[in-house]
Structures are given as C-alpha cells and as structure tokens.
Amino acid sequence: MTLIESLQSLPDYRRSRGQRFPLMALLLITIMAMMIGKYQYREISRFAKNNQDYLLKRLGLKCRFMPSHVTIRAMMQRLDFEQLQERFHSWAKSYVDIGEQDWLCIDGKAVKSTVSDYSSSYQNFLSLVSVFSQRMEQVIHVEKLENKKTGEAQVVEELLAKLDLQDTIITMDALHCKKNARSYPGEQ
Image 1: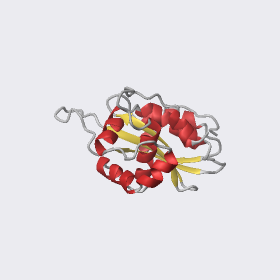
Image 2: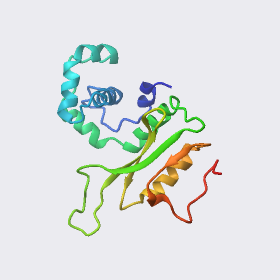
Image 3: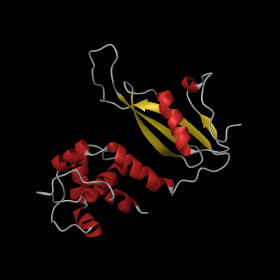
Image 4: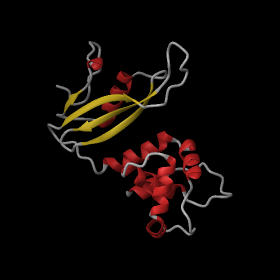
C-alpha cells in the first residue's frame, strides 16, 4: 500500500460544498513541506505556492492555485490525529525492519505551547513518546500522550506490546524500571 492510498482511506470530515482540494492532497502538501522544515501554516502555504506547477501536475489537481494558510490551518485543526497516525504507521511499518539485536531508545518529550489549565496546580500538556532505532538512525514509531489522561509508563507498555519485539535491546528512562512491570513477548 502506498502513502497516497493510506491517506485516501481517511474519512473526509469536511462538507462537500466549497471543497477545492481533496484531503489527501492537503495532507501530502503538508507532509512534504514538513519534511523540508516548514512547520507553520504560512510556510506550508508558501511551499505549495513555490512548487505550484509541479504539485498541480503530480497530484492531479484541477484548480489553478494552491491552498492558503487558512485552508491548511482549518484542515489541521479538524483532522483526527489518531486516524492519521494509524494510517501512517500501517504504511510506514512495511518499510521498517526491526531486526535481531537491534537497539531501540524510547523517550517522551513535551510538545511546546500545548499547556492547558495553566493556572491549576496540575497542568495538562501534550507529549510524544517516540521509538528511535539506532541502526536506522530514525524514529520508527510515535504515540501521543496527554498527561491528565494517562502516564508515560502506560503508553510505553502499550507501545512495546504493539511493536511485538524479539531479541531487541531497549533503552528507556529510569521511570520505567519498576518492580511490577509487565513481561513482554520475547523477554528473557
């Protein structure tokens, strides 16, 4: 399955009236822009406008212009992140081979500017727990974590169960060294 086929299987939440761009095209433009370091809505829109002829041709778009930063922002704010993540991971999994004696690092990092309930004693913020492969020198899996809903240790346990690892070396924070930790498939 290609990335385009994976993205096309995402349900489009938008009304059909006024749609000028397929959701898949907006997502591909956003992904390509982010791959070259353009993360802000205006930067993504500028990337699309600078590569307009190529993108219109390659994506098979019928319009003569690229999406504005307002269109990209609206799409990103309403997008179901879990469904996108699920589709992306299923596509990427076919390209990732975690071999025997692979060395993985798992760590969680807070995402800047995601704090809510900032005036309360227990703030809610978004974190990403990522699995990094030393051999491939890339992140091979990411999970979202909201600290009011769940903890990093629980997300890591679920992540390890999903990855179904055998003969793999894993490094993590001391937070995950607990007496009553679950045993995982392939654990010696």
